[in-house]
Amino acid sequence: MVKLIELYADLACPFAYVAHARWRRLRDDYAGRVAIVHRCLALEYVNREPTPMALVEAEIAELAKYEPDLPYQPWPGLPSTWPVTIWPAFEAVKCAERQGLSQADDLAWEIRVAFFGHGRCISMRHVLLDLARSVIGLDPARFEADFDRGVAKQFVVDESRKGWETLRVPGSPTFVLPSGRQIAAPGLPDLDVDPSTGQIRSVTMPPCAAPCWDVYRAFLDEACEAATAG
Image (cartoon, rainbow, N blue to C red; front, side, top):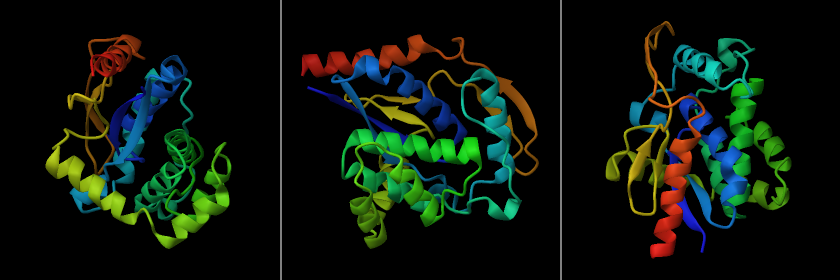
């Protein structure tokens, strides 16, 4: 039986980008045993404002130093082209989830790569439809119909509310195991960044060396054992 791990994260969060990349490198090793369910954890829901460009740019530039294979480039466009909301991207992932967890995982990854790696505005409908067409096993016509009807909008609200207000997760990303145990930002440094200027004031490295495979395998194995015990 496949055990489900929930990943509460913002699609424009650099830390979630790295965590998602690490999961995907291990995904085949856990095929048929563990699957990730992407849960919306919109930072704009709790912060009541767009995530500052200077903050995100500073965080991803620092994190990319420890993940040399991670698709990344500084934002190539004008500040006016920066997505003011990530809400449509969350809806897109939930629409993909209606066709399968694997499709949702693949689209979430394509969205993150498009944003961090190629500087695409992931709040735009045409960008999300284009990314959806690249996902193997996703019916683009059904996806477009679901997206345009807004069938996933309430999921974004409900999951963000549950993550921030019910589960009270520490932040993005947080993995929630079948047992309910929460693992926040595994194997990731703690950055103190001035959100207005993007200046990094301090970096506290995790006890493990990147990419911290032992940390990820430990909680993935824990999920597998929980499935066996259940």
